[in-house]
Length: 97
Image (cartoon, rainbow, N blue to C red; front, side):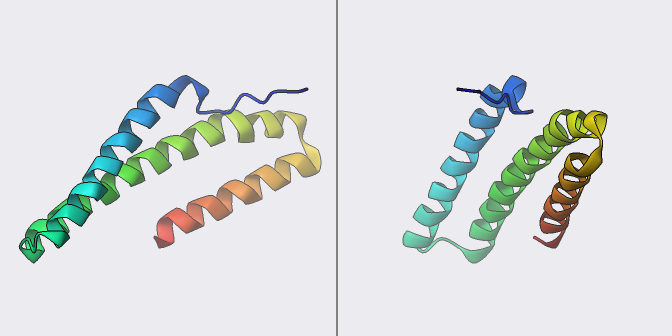
């Protein structure tokens, strides 16, 4: 059985910590809506949660480029092109969101 080491492996603990923080922020937003909090206060918390998730996404993208894409580029051929296309599509999704 072959195991794959993902590019984010060295950052896993930090990523999980950020994700837990974002999860708490989203729960806080839900609580604020449930408690009829002021709209601007809710929007401020939504912005903070969004920023936290964007930070995770950018770190994952950076790790993917440095690990998976770089490794595929060394191999060359169709694998490299597939990884570059995959990374490009991921960047496009992040920019659109």
